Structures are given as C-alpha cells and as structure tokens.
Image (cartoon, rainbow, N blue to C red):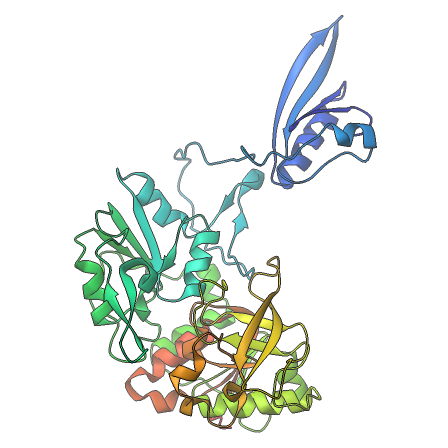
Length: 447
C-alpha cells in the first residue's frame, strides 16, 4: 500500500489502473477481517479502479509518513454479515466441523459463521432482550466469543451468592436477575443442567431455548432436566461424509451400546490395556479417564515422565481450574500453563503465574493456590481454608465430566465407562466426542 495507497484516519484508499490488482487488494483486505469497496472512475478515456479499505487493527503501511496518518477503527470496526439467503436448488447437506478451539469457520468470501448463529438468529427476531448462559464458565465464555454477548454461567445469571453466619456461602434466586423479564433465555450444553436448576430457570416465565446433545453425560447428581424431556427438534441423520469419519463411527457405536473392537479405525485405534507406549501418551493433546483416583495417578505418572520433581507446579506444567473465579477471569474446567515455578512454598498457599491454553491471546494472571490441593487428599481440605484463593490441579489427565464442553485434536481415553453403570455408554460417547482428529481408546484400562 506504500506506493498507491493513501491514509486519512481509519480510512485507506488504493487506486490502480489494473482491475485485477484492485480486486487482489480487496481480497487480501477481506481475508484480514477488513472491508473493501471497489469503485471505477473514467478519467481522460482511461479507467481507474479505486478501493476504499477499512481495517480494525492491521496497519498496511511500512512508509512512516503514511502510517502516521492512519488510525485503527475501534469505535466503528469493520463488520460484515450475510445480507440475505436465497434458494439455489437442492444439494446433499455437508456437515462442517473444525478443530479450532473457537469452532469458527469461513464460508465463501471470508464470512465467519458458527453453530451459535442459530441461537442468535432466533434472538434477533424477538422483541426484547435475550439472556445467554451455560452451566460451566468455560462454555459461557465460548458463547460470548461466538457472538452471544454478555453470556454468563447459569449461576451468575439467576442466582445471588449469600454468605451464611458460619462463613459458608449458598445460592439463592436473584429477584433482580436479567432473566426476569427476558424475551428469551438461551442455554447451551443443556445436558449438564439438573432438575433444580432447570426449574429455577423456568420460574422466571421466559421462553427457554436449550441446545445440547442428549447422548452426553448428565449432571454428576441426578438426570439432565432438559435432556430427559422430549425435544422440539432433534437432529438425528448423519450424512455420508460424517459417517466416514472414524471418530463419528466409534462414537455412534458407543451411543448405541455396541462394544468397540480392538483394531484401527483410520488414524484412530482401540487398543488393549498395557499396549500403549509412554511416548504415545505424552504426545496426546489430552488424556481422559473416569475416576479422580485414576486422574491423579496418571497426572503423577506423566509428570515423572516429563522430569518434574516437585509435588507443586513447575514451569510449563499443565493445570486445570477447579472453580470459577469471575474476578480473576478464570473458569471451572479451563486449562492453563504454569509460567513459573510455585512461589512461597513454606506457607499454606503459594503464588504462581498462569496463562490460558484455551484462549492464548489473553494476558497471564497471578493466582494464589492452597498447597494441599496438590497433596494426597485434597478432598479433606476445609472450605474455609480455600477462601480468597484460586483452585487448580494438574491437567494432563482429566475426568470426562470435567472435559465436557471442550475438544482436542488427539485424545487418549482410558475406558472406565463400566463404573458408571447405566450411564456407561454416555460416558464413552462423551469421551469419544472430545476428540476432533484422532482418538485412542485403551480398553479395560485401569490406573
């Protein structure tokens, strides 16, 4: 842009006698998230092509003089949308699935879309405000990133925290909740909502749109309130392209209660216990198990293989958040990397700096953690000792319950579905669908 470009505030102009060059500049601008409008002017018998460019953060000038005249368009950033959809015949539907953590993908001409668009389209056609919420903070954060503004946890939406005389806290329905008078409430990951929370949501009298997979795990206690009911719309058909995906085939077999035979399924595998090499476990994006005891055992084993010597976090250790902390901006189930060793090891708590693995662009934060959370019996900790701290544990291995709402490219599953009895097939189905590219199932696994 240094040669044929001009800048004035957040507006950028480009002109050329070449139509192809103008179209190329417009194409590149749109690929960077900007907007570009091409116009034609005839001067002295010759055509000149102009491009009006608008970019949010990216300065296209190296020339200092031109760069100094440009400013980012933050107040009114460039935005693009699907203006209309018109019938164009009938074709086989193609299901799109991407491994990116934000699930965003691009349609033609760099239009960004996402499954959450469905919920937003309902909301935009309703007069009044819409409340978006999910059971976990991580799922709510994903909703917000995907355009569901002001999305929160369900607890944050409809409850208020009340401290009891003995210092404990409880949740009571908030009469001033934004759900009171809402035109629509949208709930994502609805399989995790139990009966009490479901009835509390319905008590506000607003229409509720719930989104979720009824084949996934129910809440830790009780059944899924919404998934136990008959849905208004159920998507059941798997199209040919998806059926050929080995992970989908394995997940479908698990959902239907079929045994997974030992063998290879494309890049995925089902193997017998004791046959998986340590290097294969270390190279996986995530390890999933059924029991907390198994989780602790595998976290300890993986840390030994990595050469970690301390029982407390060391630099580059992988951590999982165990409890929401809105002020710190961390959420239950979120994954983090320790940026330094645990500091202040002599007291009951220690400080450390952590960076989000789920949202790499976010700045690192300093947290205070009770050292006994990394001890042999963290469940024995008195809740009073945890006040004013953030709660973490090692995150190389997670329980499937903790992994709900997340997805990784390469997952190793130690199949402990049998301990969940009636929910065995749901456990295995949920675990399998956490993988986006490859999955390895260790059959009959134990720690």
